[in-house]
Length: 444
View 1 (spheres, rainbow, N blue to C red):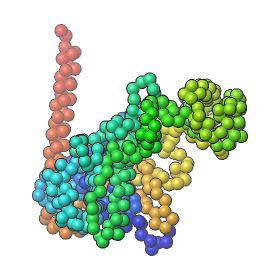
View 2 (view 1 turned 60 degrees about the horizontal axis):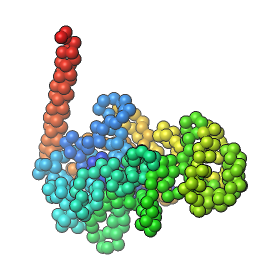
View 3 (view 1 turned 180 degrees about the vertical axis):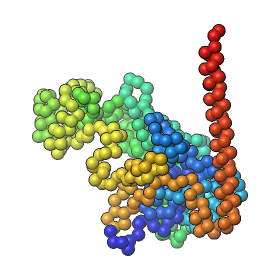
View 4 (view 1 turned 120 degrees about the horizontal axis):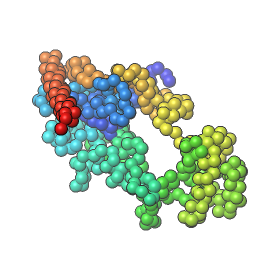
């Protein structure tokens, strides 16, 4: 890359008022692409700073993995928006900003005077980029949302899991992350629109629910066109008949078999799988047939039963070794998250980056996934400490040293008081439990 070329969003300033994933992950993308992203946090910080989750053995006080994933490389400004001085600080930042990025509820923003109409009147060039759970209109526009609510309402949960059991929640927070993708896409689109309309800012809104519809465009169009009453199908796609699906192997692993494009590869597969009769079955003689076209549900059940038995006779590694010799078979070995983090294909494409996390050290995170020949983005470092940029960023925005000191001290005091109350509550709870244990030990 020529050194003279800046990153794509270099010079763009983003003021981010977000929590959790849907907003922060979008800001993380903008930061990777060169934007300056200032994350405005309350005195206690974004709650995801403290989330630990299952299996987290990092030292107590270590910043949470969710915060690390979504906020790396940003600057943190810590202010109390319930105070006039805190709001004044945000307006100082917005005065020089290109984007206001938020996933706060619209009613809460309006109470703070940070709604679109108010900010657009003051900062007409500002892109107001907002994401919520269920969209900006309708009776549920201001309902609270966590990822599971959006995937349930959007239909993905209903179509995930075995046909004869309760629906399953997907293994990743797909509503939050795809909502973030739509927010980032909408933001850069709005920025391009501003360049073409004389510098006028506008309101851009999207939602976690909307992102679920985007994920299922084909499936929803299929149901709309056909009226089909589809059912979830466990290891298989609800629309696709035939071999397509996931099969367990002898070692407890799994292989996803998608498609076989050429007949000779299908023949080789059937020989290796010890199901030679499938190589000659007239229903499977074309790529379309092997992807379920023209098959009945009974046909699918018949073929899948044979393939389930065949895959269970060999280990995942044996299947991997064979399938790599067949270039026209579309397949993949199912990998767990530990394997994903070490996947040589992802490493070759620089899809991961290592950032420093206090208390842990070097930590691998998902990095910049967009490749550009001349102006690539890059990961800008680890997560910011809470309020680390108060003095530098707010001073550059025109706030006086005395005001910065006052709002910083106020936020610190609020945080200290909250932590003291938390410590006292934990201590009281611990004493009660200890007392109960002692009482249980007393003879009756």
